[in-house]
Length: 292
Length: 264
Image (cartoon, rainbow over the protein chains, first blue to last red):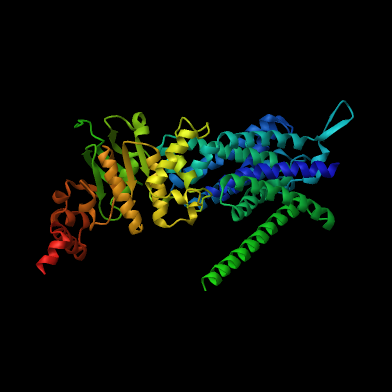
């Protein structure tokens, strides 16, 4: 049962990340996803310090805001201070992450719930420790599962309702502005969703490997389809596949679960890439053969 | 019917990046129902002027009026065609998907595209001659076809004023003639089209009115008024070989090609 809940929780993380990752990838903002996932740390620590519990709404809001703040600072650096785009990203998130590390060391001394290890790598194996039990004895799954579900509904709903907006923002931002769409609102809304997703995912998969969930499945999906809706579906499929296969591999080889999931994800990308190349060269050869 | 309202009025427009002016004190009025060319050397602020008119860049000073009003009041009557290179054509979308974007507005983003939108998009695709490619992925089109997709998207906006950034760059002959006949059709319907162009050989054939820029406004008027040796040397500076070629070409344009044959 615990295995099932762990896989289910991780699968929802993977789906949330995959859906948003598609738009990050198409907007050439993959590294901004990386930046957000690190920059939420000071927000998490500060909010945790004040609320004292991991599941609080204050923590979600505080951490999400600190992620959005990071994208705002990145924009500011690159536009006003004329720092190159990737340099602005590198500066901002390392700075915020470093502040977060110091805050952990000072505010969280001796606290078992949040430490550097957990923040960096997550602790998916411990997800089942924080149980929700109703009627005194009915176990309905770990708390993280429900946090993920709520975040998932927000992400899924936003993408369904705002599909046209996100699509146009990703394809041609100047054109979107020219027809009177408030692109900066859409931009910050998307960044907010990414921040929310990485915040709720951090205790499951950690701040570093969440990027693997955000970027690798959409990148794999882009290899197999030329349609946006199909790309969203495929990204979810590849994400969940990596979770299931990764979990089984981790149990079999007795290694880090999240590590195995991201490794599988990367391997799936390589495999799909290889297959697509092989197919293309085959079809190219048959075209040439037909012409001869 | 002659309209007194100008399609575009640009007043004392100055735009700068990093304190360096890219456009300096530009002033011009453009009449409705004309095909207007904006020309000038590379880096002369052509694209910047278009983006400032479209409200994509904030001017340091000056203002722009469209049909005598602010852009926000008449946004539905203006269509913008960005440079083809400004987007990633590997984006997962079909020709129809992109042209349907021409029906998007700030106000209708949350509803699905309806039957009318679809019909208008399909008509627009037909007008640029891409009907057989309507379901094709946009990365699998030639450069000229991609340009036509952008123009179809603008047509789907059903605007009165069209602003096009370099639509003739890197397109094949079929696309060029398709665009030209569309422009003629649009002009006949009383639409106004502003086009950034850099090929001086063709300007006098394509446009009714020209704006010659090099950070400052060098000249404006009908092609034969603008394309003088003095104006061109003011705009293009010391590029003399180019300049003499241009003047020769303009002279040739005054005598149609077949007459030249008779001369020989």
